[in-house]
Length: 156
Image (cartoon, rainbow, N blue to C red; front, top):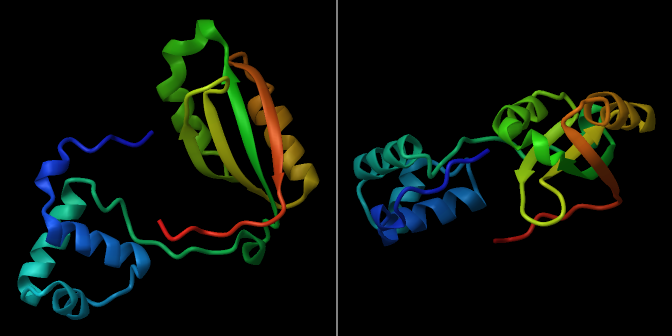
């Protein structure tokens, strides 16, 4: 699970601009970032390091289509934890992230406790995730699976 921002006031308008630019293009060079926000490259580098240290930047990665790495079947799986298992939620969330097919783990409100974005090799792989890794544990009260036919990333 992700730590919540400690205090949004630690970010000024330049920090927010840098975050927006990096979110749009994580490969933007430091010199270009500095120029776009109107600061010196050395200042920009210091700010980027600080944003990483405080957790505002969680990492840099490529947005890879799972089909190109042999995982064309995608689904969202809603997971409900048994009420008597609430004390194990943190440990359970970490174990979910260790499942190879799981791309993202969301701890949510509502009738389910977690939403998992899963990318599986095939239908049998997806079934194994659901029946062996999820439904096969005493912590789980139930799951509901939604196949993803198409995914588009938003601008926000």
